[in-house]
Image (tube, rainbow, N blue to C red; front, side, top):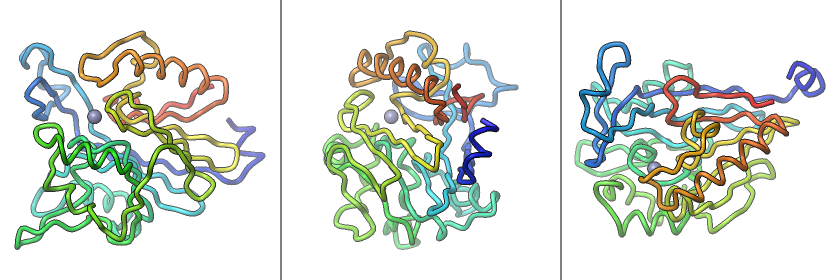
Length: 257
Ligand SMILES: [Zn+2]
């Protein structure tokens, strides 16, 4: 890693924006969970313990945001806005918002409601990168997995770049549809100099799932998720990727080597 930095001045700044730990069960309600105080056994059977954690990536060109959190507000301010400001970043400085998929724990911060009850995109100067079919699927499916009202503002919005299938943004951000965790879920590789950063969204949500063979019931195609994780893990270790884990309570960033 030191060698890489030496060869190449270009690198990322990565800022995880944790919104806390939660348990989630069949009801798909996210219940706050304090690791030092609460006990997983006291939550409904089958509850999963997850972090909810969007990431800011500062590259030479952009201030990227990857996924947008739950969209909860405190004192009238979106949590993702206060978390950004706590890191010295204003919401209007975000240049691109990359969306892995539109489940409510990833897309809640896409928009915010004004006093009249109208929704506006919460990053006024950003381009939003969303798979067209994911949006259609989300609007069709709705509650409780998706919050149609919060995401409906994307429709016909001039700030949205509708993606169809696989491709590349600005020659540096690669996106790929996996149809694994959800039918139109996409993952991203962000390239800067020699560095490759990988965001697998809910196809690869936690470090432990990369290391163990594990098929999750909540995935659209659990077997495909597992196979992809193994493939990415092998390739990532061979090529020294930096992995970002949206739902990992302990290891949001992992440098593979
Ligand atoms: Zn999801």
